[in-house]
Length: 440
Image (cartoon, rainbow, N blue to C red):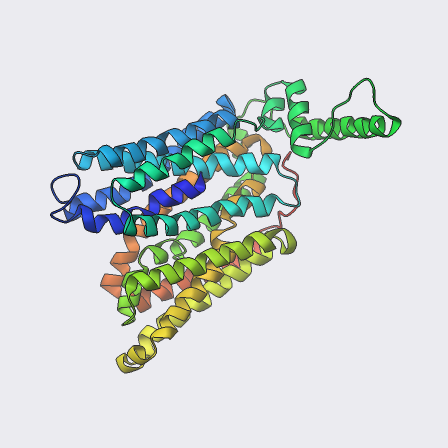
């Protein structure tokens, strides 16, 4: 599902050229104003998805919400194929954003609740890996496939996803919250790969069944001890430990977005133009995208070995240094030096892409979920992701203005400053959440 969302995001950039031409498949060419709305409505859809799915998670369950994620995405591809005018694209992009916003709330919580502690970080960070992979696939497909062929192919992916999750059980935490203990037991055994008891078993199997029962009972008491069956009140949010958690999450989100971890890679071509790179901007963008994918792949392999804190701080510090390098290149390198050393700007951007992806990009969702108390995890994640989506909108708006009005160098100094701020604050106050029980 995250791969499909990435493809939906990546579709836009190459398609805008066609939609704005005289050969536009929707009739009249898109104006600049219309194109900006087509681009930004995915952000408003994402914000809506964060809030809607956050409210539905504890009411309808994780499994039902997972099915629902596929529907807006499928309608998006149908609207692209049948588009008669720009309103079809507006509606489609909003729905694509709603599906993606839901993915960022539903899937990390589902994964965190079913995964073993030893692989939870890797599985959670895979979500961003597949989004990045999807963006590259979307960029390539929209560049080389016809406008009407691509939706016919990609719409198969959410259908495959919906069929693939049929065999998955609802999470045991959700079932215990709603008093369905027997179903919760079956779900726990399913995800932990434990055998249920039967009448004709050997002594060894009987001992294993007894151990499984004890393990589930311990888990059940831990979950219920976390207060998830009690009614949520304002006091659950406005107490010192929880407010400290939300403060850390807010710093994490600000540093993630205003350090340029998302905006920089949306304006890669423009940055290479500012650095007077003679290489083809599209080629450079694909190279940087591949570097980002490599960085997230490294995060998947390292997050459960080294922990969240080490990777995040290394990523934030390295990203700040890389952005300082780009600012120095813009400030102090002569035009002749830049034109003769095209590789240097590509190398710096690839370094920023890799080091940002190792922690700042890949780990934000898993850290937020692991920091939040179990009782308010669904609502807290929804609010956090809504804030995240809002700052995506803010960063995408201010970065081109900053680069155009104040220059690339000033923009990079600001981004590096945010990395330094995040490195200090999170270095002092962020706890290690590796191995934390999801029942508290």
